[in-house]
Length: 436
Image 1 (spheres, one colour):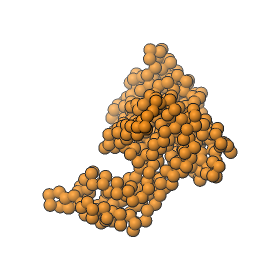
Image 2 (image 1 turned 180 degrees about the horizontal axis):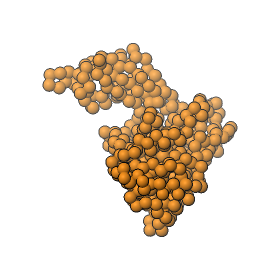
Image 3 (image 1 turned 45 degrees about the horizontal axis):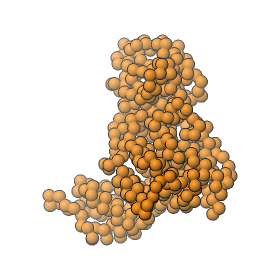
Image 4 (image 1 turned 90 degrees about the vertical axis):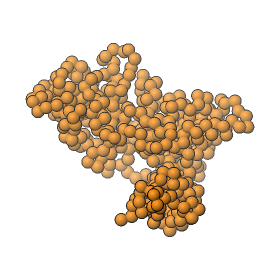
């Protein structure tokens, strides 16, 4: 199930970003110790009471020199499109303002739940001043202090009450995949080509959030797929879709709802920093990945062009060294027929399980070839390994001392596992634990 999305909206300078950072905690930092994994501060992951969710900081919206009212409307429109719950933030220090009333009136148009947070209530005496915010008609105001963390627990308690019911979702055996990437790389053309050539849409699935429509189709071989609507990249957004950072937000939803991600790169434009942002989301979420280089027909080529482009991708996307690369043309249909089988293969790898006995044979053989490292006379001892999860495949390795497991040796063991089993297209996770 896709993680619920919480949008934080309000006029400028009410402390939205402070609340965003407080909710995100340390999760907003880059978590991968590998080159090329970057993250946009527009959103972050958070959790509360065993709920995992995403938060959007609409305070980062920039709309040039347009009037103040347009900026407010821009924030709210983004929130209405993407969020499951909206948190409207006002300032208890400055009191109710006309701009707050404008935001509230715009929120009346949505059927999304709205939670009203009054920030900068830094001491108990200020609580008496929050009652004027009842005039906004958004229910009980929650006094908080983003800078001190006061009242955030009560606010989060109220937020999670409005999350969608997980039980409402049904199991589906079809493979769910989405096509993501920065604007103008040809995602829509690939979507249309996949659905329009030798395939039939047999049904439509109403999306569980924001009325997205996902497309179900079946190949001639009988394999069933659901192509996840990437939050309306072709029809929504208008003004904002030209702003690259909002393609990131759209991609986030698609990643959460998919088993397989097709990351599209424009062969003509080459690799951009934004490509790394978008790919980083899928990698960090543990999704299986395929890198699709589109517009290959428009490139002047020689016998080494494809190899050189692939080497560039591997250099720029070191954290995606497991992802297969396909060079396609949505315009001519070149190699698009390979995608369904490749999607099926990487999805199977994403769900693959390895028996403990077979896994331990591989680990022990690897240690025999490359003995474990030592530090100050103490040598790392590996006792046992077992797979504990799939999607992505996750392995626990029990050792005598976690501190003795150097990153390079952990990487060596991961490579040995990949050499012994086909995990192409999927990340794998190693968890190192001390045996107790």
